[in-house]
Image (tube, rainbow, N blue to C red; front, side, top):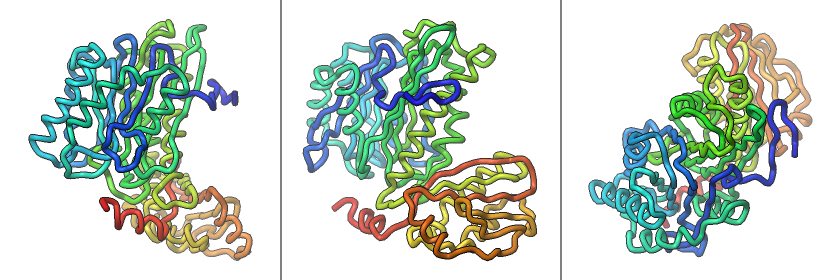
Length: 410
C-alpha cells in the first residue's frame, strides 16, 4: 500500500471493497460485441445515498428515476447500469423503460423500487431493447460477487468508448475503525462535466449522515469531476452516485467530527483519481494534460481560467503536436472572462519557463519538445493577482478523436 498523508491508497481495491458491497456485470446484448453491457452494485444493508447530475437541459430518463429513488428516503440498496444505449431524448417511452428497468431490478434483488437507482450510457435517441435489458437484469443477482471478480465485471460493463476501466480505493482510520472508500467510473468522450457520457460510483462503509454525504459530494465534485474536459461537451447522462453502508462502525461523520477532514481528503482522492483517469483516457488521447492556475482573485476564478485553458481546442492541438506554443495558452487565459493583470502572467511548461511577467523568455525548443512528448504534460499559469488557485485535467486533441466520433453510431 502507498501511504498518502491521512489515508492509504489500496491499488488492488475496487468498488466492492467497502464492507457490505458486491458488484457484478454481464452481457445482455446491447453492444454489438460480447463485452459486458449491464452491471450492478448491491449493498446488503440500506446505504445512505447522495448524487449529483448533469446540468444539461436534456436529462436522460434514468436521472429522473434515480432522483426519485434517492429523494424518497435518502437510501439505496442497488444501482443498475447499462452501457451501449443512453436512453436519452427517448420521450415517454424512454421514461417508462427507465421505470421498468428499476422495477425489474427491484424484483430480481427482492427490494422496494425506491431502493434502486438506474443509470445508462451510450447512444442518444434510441429506445432500449427492454426484452434484452430485463432478461439481463434477471441474471444480475447470480453475477454478483464481493471483491475483485465481481467489481471487474461491473467496471467492464459500464464502459463505452473507454479503453481502460477506472477504479480507485483508499482506507483510513475513523474513531479507531478502518474505513474504506472506493469508486468506479466510465468516461472517454462527451466529457465536460457540470454537476457530469460520464458515470461514477463511490462506495464506502463509513457511517455518515445523508446531509453530510450530499454536501461532501457536491463540494468534491466541483474540484475533481467538474475540473476535467475532453471535448467541451456536457452529456445528457452524467451522474455521480455515492453510497455509504455504515458497516465500519464509526460514530456518524459530519463536519465537526474529529476525523472529518481526513475522511474528506480521502474521499477527494478517490474522486480525483477517477477524474484524472477519465481525462487520460479521452477518446483518441495520447497524453494527460494538467493545468494549474495560481494567483487568481479567487479559487472560483482560478477554476474558470484553468478549465478554459484545458478546454481550448488550440491548446489541445498544440499538446498533440508537442508544440510549445504558449501564445495559445495566454490567449485562453485572457478570454476566460476572469480578472487578470495583462502585465504579470507567468507560464511554465513543466519546469520550463516560457513567459515571465507577460514577456516571452528564451527557452530550449528541443527540451520543450522532449517534455511535451511525454505521457503527462503540466502547464503552470501564475497570475500574480490574488490567492486563488485550481487545477484542471484534460487531454490532447488527436486525429483519432475525429475518427472515433465521425462514426460513433456506425
